[in-house]
Length: 481
Image (cartoon, rainbow, N blue to C red; front, side, top):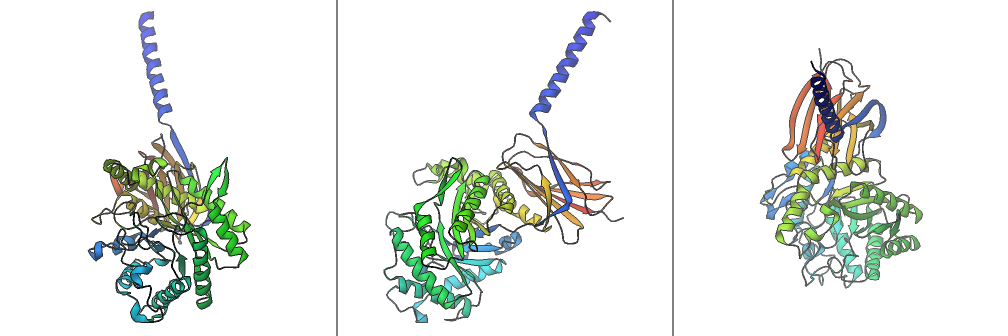
């Protein structure tokens, strides 16, 4: 062999080696470590939603698929939007001139059916007292009530009906009662002033507390809670004035509700911490924090969803929210929120149509299957230590079942260039052969079982390939001899 042949072979080998190194650099393996001997408490069921299961005038009933999610709470706002005929004050008490003490002045029929179906999902109800949003130029119902005392009396009638059986009612045991929604969102949700809302809250909250001291009353379901400036949270004047009012007059505030739509799951965590610090600073350390409207906002902009947005852009935005990106966002957020100081979270929304978990025909979408994967994690509620998550990009939480005989690892890859993961489970509660199932949500899979393997040793590293955005649930269980 001549020197030239050797040189050419060397060049070829060097080229192959370089190609391998470039490929390896382009596709690094992301290590994820789970220590099943290190307990972190419980996995929290933060996957509440908005809206009940009856859609299209009862033509579509989503009770069964929502029950399959194990939703903990359902907040009732914008129900049957854009033509709300249930829950809202005007739907239940259509003539404000009537006497709220008389049962025949209420129309509970449609709302009762809606509430019954909602409870059939297994979820607790959060009842928003107020009205749904109005995007039309002429507003019909989002005005300050002419008589706040009378409006409060109507609210008491609704509570009596739902919880005490008054007026041929029910006994649903609804604990959380929220006063209005986004009163700072004008004129779509409120045509009055800040003081008009403060007057309404003062009146209604005081009356509800006096009549039902064991119930939880709160609000204001604020959409604009504040902004971060150089890392510092600066609440809006509406929020600080509302909290100051409640502190100054010792008004009931059992829960403070707020909203956030974003493309960054970590923003939800930052806001949760900021809201908690704000509540504590005003003396409301026992007040629950409710993130009761949130969802993925593609591009972090409302442009694609606005009234002036071209229809094709609007369709793309909604399809993105409902697709694999929306699923990965939702799961990443729920995993990051596990350690955030928030008590209740309600995704907007669990109904059909835009923002929802189902299309207009009631068919589950990718974001539904993302929540189904999260529910699978809750089958192993004893949370354990897991390392390798990247804020805003990669979520990771793992758990054991009560008996310690099964384990789950939930991974959400929202924005990762790497598609290969090495999951290293250690200190499982058993030794010997382990069955590992991989369930996947991505562009091609709807929470599908894509792989089942048997590892001879329980702590064997697991190789996982994901094409972001994606959600993967690994189920591990001991194989009996």
